Image (cartoon, rainbow, N blue to C red; front, side):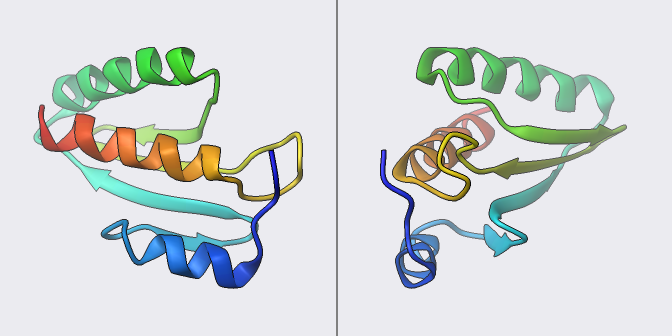
Length: 95
């Protein structure tokens, strides 16, 4: 697992709509219909995180969900973060 450079991160972000890089993490906020809808999506994301053995920092307030990703083992962003972000996008877009 290799830590990506800032230039590599910016290049990969071009393929992820709405994701940004800040404070050593890639992140995105999502807004859903209500708490039940939000928690349902979070549950599906949690199962995918377990499958990939890669877990987000996230915060949920009612119908808002913010997800932040980095790879703690390398102290930065790796391809694992982008792979999980793509999986999260698929889950959110297919709810």
